[in-house]
Amino acid sequence: MASTVTSSQYIQHHLTNWTYGRHPDGHWGFAHSAEEVANMGFWSIHVDSLLWSFSLGALFLFVFHRVARSMTAETPGGLQNFVEWVVDFINDNVRGSFSAKNDLIAPLALTVFIWVLLMNLMDLVPVDWIPWLAGQFGHFVLGMDPHHVYFKIVPTTDLNITAGLAVAVFVLMIYYSIKIKGLGGFLGELSFQPFGKWGLPANLLLEGISLISKPVSLALRLFGNLYAGEMIFILIALLYSGGILWGTLGGFLQLGWAIFHILIILLQAFIFMVLTIVYLDMAHQHH
Amino acid sequence: MNIGLTLFGQTLAFIIFVLFCMKYVWPPIMTALDERKKKIADGLAEAERGFKQQELAERDAEHKISEAKQQAADILNQAQKRANEIVENAKSDATEEGTRIKEAAHAEVEKEVHRATEELRTRVSVIAVAGAERILKKEIDAGAHQDMLEELATQI
Image (cartoon, rainbow over the protein chains, first blue to last red):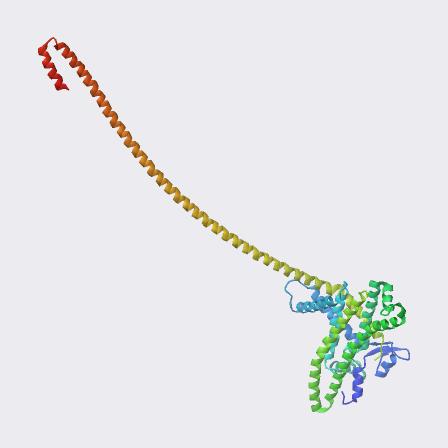
């Protein structure tokens, strides 16, 4: 692919989402280039991100729901064993860091962990496989220029996706803060700590920043890690166009990075889950 | 990379997925896990109880066996004693009986002797009376007196 396009075009192609949105002239449609995507601004939907995100989430729920329905207390089979192991792991984590009683937290943590993990795992699929297939599909079935078919398969390298999760967690944090402590209690926490009532502006500033920083860091940490990982895979993939020597080196690099990346993938999913639990636990506590 | 509607799509999906998970995935799995936990705990407790019962039964059996042994020994002892007693009794009975028979025989012999003596006495007295009678008759007949005395003498 890189033989017909420059490196920067190749990279940009890989970093552009398949986007449906409102063009500057007001009509809705798919974007055909990175500039068009940029011009859409807020009124755009990353179809590929959402498609993969929904599919992976649905896959997770489908598998777990099937196991849950045929769940027995007798000797568990293979898949049930795995599911039980995961559920037990999540349950231990929730019990360890969440002190209040809330039936939402454990299923929430399970969903976050498995879903994010699955989305991160897409990063291990070689960067050109599925975009190339999509390009061929677009070219031969839909009659498009394959260079204008954008198809990113790792939803967590899309800030919209990670921020979407973080926003939901943030809303839950606010909701439970107000529900447990009352609106007054919640605002009081924001206003009268840590410097007492005479330091109200400073308190508001500090507590406000610390409150906002939670979802922001949640979203950016996951996005940043996966985006960087994806970027390195793309850069390694560039080596394949540099002849047999560079290609072989690229192969080894990709293998090494993929093996290391497994750790990041697991770790980031785990961190996202743990922080979700911890933030919600803080929302449940009186200070 | 621009923030857009994608974010809200993702948030919406997240909410739906979490609700689904909370309603249809988590509870049945947790229920089954708890049930299994309880089952295992029950099984272990049952095993423990069975073990204890077996121990108890073994101890009971041992106790019963020793008791039975004791009883058997007692019975044997008693039987021995009883047998000895019977033999002793029989011996003393026999001795007594022998003594009694001997005494009876003695008494019989004595009685016989007594009777014979009595008879002899009566006879002697009768003979004496008869002799006296005859003597008295012979006073008159002197010749005859000598003959009668001789006759008496032979009779005594």
